[in-house]
Length: 141
Image 1 (tube, rainbow, N blue to C red):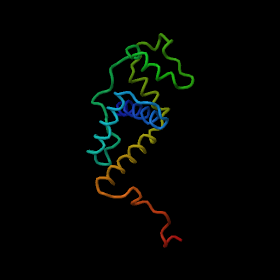
Image 2: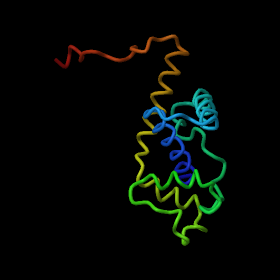
Image 3: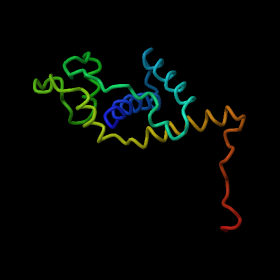
Image 4: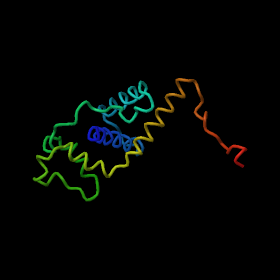
């Protein structure tokens, strides 16, 4: 489960990065986001971490990745994988699982919870500011 979540969180983190930095999305990424939103709509809140979770982990090796996808890993400072022959047969899932240790999973979780909250408010006909208090309770002050 941790390995499948690592794969999913890496994809989601990448998409969030692109959206927040106004980087154009590919058609496949747009399709993934649409499926992600649709999947969130049908999940109870305690299951949103499993949104878009694959049935199985990837069986690909690093060598089987297209050059454009392999280049994604080299965007991280100090990472040089494409020129390293020792990495060619390395399991992609192992690599993702190791790299997931450097990602803040709570960032993806916060994005999902915010999206879920917006969807629920919309479906219940509530305004965006609903449930957000501008001042503390008078009993506290």
